Image 1 (cartoon, rainbow, N blue to C red):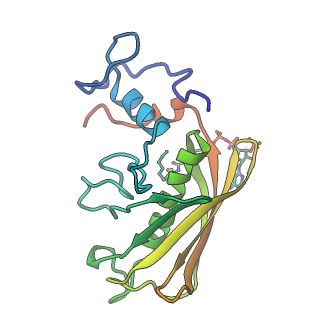
Image 2 (image 1 turned 45 degrees about the horizontal axis):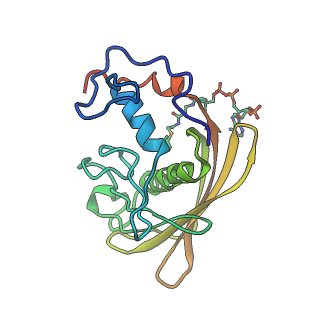
Length: 189
Ligand SMILES: CCCCCCCC(=O)SCCNC(=O)CCNC(=O)[C@H](O)C(C)(C)COP(=O)(O)OP(=O)(O)OC[C@H]1O[C@@H](n2cnc3c(N)ncnc32)[C@H](O)[C@@H]1OP(=O)(O)O
């Protein structure tokens, strides 16, 4: 796996977390620390993968508006059992389609741990086959279908308790360098 920090210009005005130091002893910027955390995922003994960040809208545990997906590594990709709640409601009792898409998008983000490179969503298509009900468990799974240059083609499905698909998704992620994330405004956190 290549080092995703290669070519990083550093983010001078960002605040370094107190306990993060580089191998050369210098302080790491918040962005560098995040890139490192993305490149060294340590699944738990049960296979649980670390969130993209504590405040990630898809999987962060410190985002009160987030989905807080809990994602596990599988032999071929990743999976999550998830139930949406009232905060994700669209029509009464039914999950808003945009939030279903968000779940797929974030799940795809976990495949990057397997790929070992940073990439971002360029396109995302969701097929809504049946209503995704609130307060109901669904099993989401995703895998990388193939790669072509910088393009990663990824696929996913959400199944109900009977194993019937309620939604499927496919997306193109494009591999990016660290510079992509330097556009993010994390200095003012
Ligand atoms: C990282 C962990 C967190 C994960 C969280 C969940 C995922 C997310 O939410 S990511 C956030 C949402 N996405 C973004 O913000 C991305 C915004 N878009 C961008 O920054 C740019 O468009 C970016 C980087 C994707 C591509 O731009 P750029 O680097 O200029 O590449 P570009 O030349 O346009 O295209 C790159 C490749 O993709 C291909 N491509 C572009 N669009 C498409 C498309 N719609 N379908 C298929 N292929 C495409 C191009 O043909 C090209 O292929 P190749 O390199 O093989 O010739």
